[in-house]
Image (cartoon, rainbow, N blue to C red; front, side, top):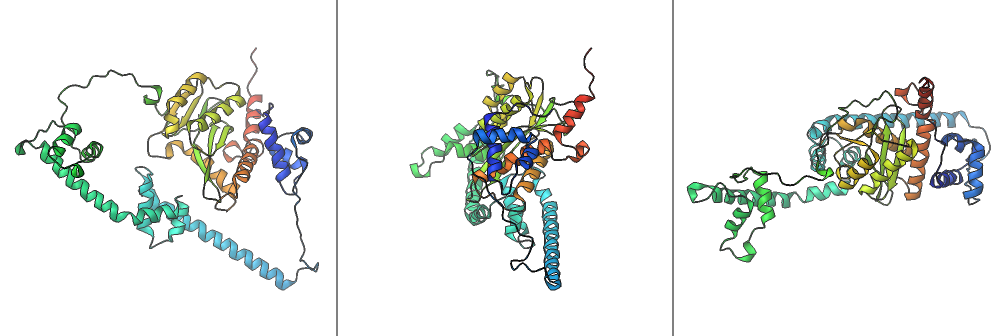
Length: 412
């Protein structure tokens, strides 16, 4: 249903949007936000600064003369060239993503992205590859320059693995039951301080090479895990639909790049039935409080989330103890997709891509933090109130929910 209760924060953001938008009218901004012109006018009187941005537009040449035929042809040719360049760009992106798919089949770890760029730099420009798969060029070059050091460490780890095998080999007087603590002690016995090996490194090399010591005793479970340690099932199984609102939600965190090289982060809560963005939060960090704020915003919009499923990925914030505690307090049923695959949260991933594509409008970054927050606020509210959604029969999420409500008979 359409939102009726508005927080002071929402009112202030609406006024800020009106005052900062060139050529804005009360009617236009009010329609975008799904409110009445009178309501917005009252908010402007209460929270406004009294300043607005005036748009400067011109439909004629600077001299005031009409456009000549030659100028019109030149303008149209420039537009055609621009469209052809856009088409080439899109085709290049599609080709890059098709080839990148196999790299991320088992997970989209950062090293896989770096390796993909390294393997395809002769086919595409490094800059274009990094833009499409969303990594910083400087990070890629840093990874590439560190290759000799990685190779040296890998060789050293291989040599250490051979020494560990010798310690565990009964034929050489070793013990195959030795785990990392005993192996470390054996390796460091009688060795100078500068040649000693760290027990964490020994444990890592043993794990990477399958050299764990034999367990001589059955492991006894003595500790009950915290909620964040419990295995959370995937309750959606990639079925991102629901018969009624406020029953199934998906959410994710996406970064919002700023011109100064930093990022803001957006957390979302999206209704699977109506595709409504029921809650969202923006911050300059990815701590658990970010996703908690988004869930609380959805609670404020819906009134109650008890019994609803909320599905996310295996990000640390969605598996944290504090987040699990909040879900328990709100009666929210947690659901998590498999590790290393974005398809298990495709609806949220698609939403994030659409938001950034439409708010950035071809730009690589937002100009600054204030502009980013403003654009996301405007787009998010308009998404709910006015933006038509193909899966909803080309109506907005709020309209869909209102129409859905009229088809449900009232209880006798």
